[in-house]
Length: 110
Length: 117
Image (cartoon, rainbow over all chains, first blue to last red; front, side, top):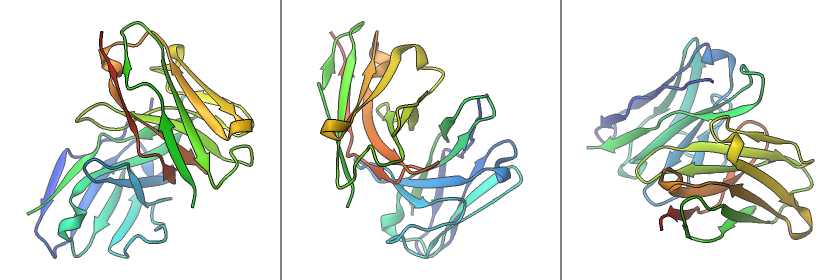
């Protein structure tokens, strides 16, 4: 089955830019979605289809995808961005549809 | 605004069957999209359990496929999850969610299910 690899944790100072990566075999050929999960809450999609941004999500959140790595970029980081972030793709390479999540990255705002 | 709400027992005994229902409001589940279940063990990441298409086709995580059944109940605008032969490893927060295609755009608040005797 398809595997998505994320760093377990990243940290950043307020006001700076942070990039969270999601690695997968030829992930650039897939649509990648990113979710933010604050403690005790359900996940919320912050980027869909590599770089789309749902209504209500700040422009500070952006995404890119190429080769074997997709990236979620958060600019001008705020304390409220501290959360777990998950990447997700749809994959059918095994012959059946799978919705696959990465292991998640904990973002700490210093 | 589409809303989803999980319901069901919070405690299930080992070897028994976990059953949850997801009630959907502001959208008819028979109109379209996939409807899915995702779980999250305490302190761990998200795991996709399975999806059901609005016309009834089901897709399951291969690691759980032998124990999972997802069904539609269109008259009540609900869909359900059954997971058989549960163990402590099935203790998790269970979320239901809507998937228009490949992403999940609306999620329930989640419900904690503990497997313990």
